[in-house]
Length: 484
Image (cartoon, rainbow, N blue to C red; front, top):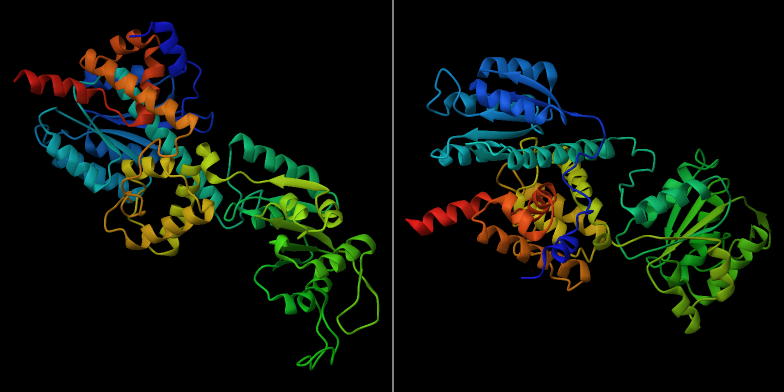
């Protein structure tokens, strides 16, 4: 085996812990546990990171939950008056989820009662943990629950009616932060903007955000898809026409540019515009005047133009299909939208936002989130159709799902595995997984010893295992089964 230091460096001591809560405020946590020793152990271990509330039985637990409305609950299934069964714990679980379906409930039970733990999962619990409690492992489970609860909260805010400060644009990755910063800087000007990105990345949302943050926000925002209108009609759509200008022109018609006077016109798929129309658009950008088709009157307009394309305009210029002078007129400011496959930090938040939206729209309030296999598939799929594809898959899953959580099969992503893109990141993750699993096998699931063998800290290994959905306890069970 390689020396510890290189392995530790490869596994990434400085890797961002994706299980941290999205905000700095402490998540509220309720511990429902009748065993004083375990209750004190959990409170001592978790109080530094969470706003901890305690309850010793089911009734106290429900009352404390109603008061504190915690995001995460740890719930012992064996509560009085039935400490040897799960009836009371399951009753409390049902009560909590009826009050707040998005609460993340982690059930604890004896290691001989896995059947009731699985029943709790079917009823909507987030996860289960078999006693005895190994604090570091349990802390990782709680941290992941808090992280997902925070993501869902942010998703609900993003899906609320007003669209948020950026008209519904959701994203916290570095590339999207740069996009939002450019929106802020350009919105207060009248500069033309060219938005470039693959189909489905949200180009119109960016255009609307620029308009909404500008001095033109109270005037019209007029979108037009240059690729969806036949070339013979597009000129009339843009510039309007006079009565009798051509066969069928029975009345005078105002064009989209004129409709947008004082506001913004959004020209999507600008690369599909014919060279003839490109000349007329260039003339408008230069002198801010139009003539309707069949007319002779010059009409002066105050319109901001934002254009978008999913094609390679420099290549189109080389091929003679797009005018170089128009390109430079349109791209005073350029915004490049990243594809969803490059927005790993955002993909689950987007999925949760769509889930929250369609859960309400399709009247499926009992849906409580994504199953673990769905979360993994969402993070590992390449999303060739970008945000639009994710939106469509989540909507279909909400409509078709038969359980309380959406599975990878519901999303049409069954069988999606990590590393299918052959990228450097995927290869790194594959090697990390192999190294971590080999270490757990050697140490029979001892996380501390495995971390030492790999030359990394225990919290780093715990974070890595949580991200890979690997449970160290499985390796302990495997060893016990092999020795029987």
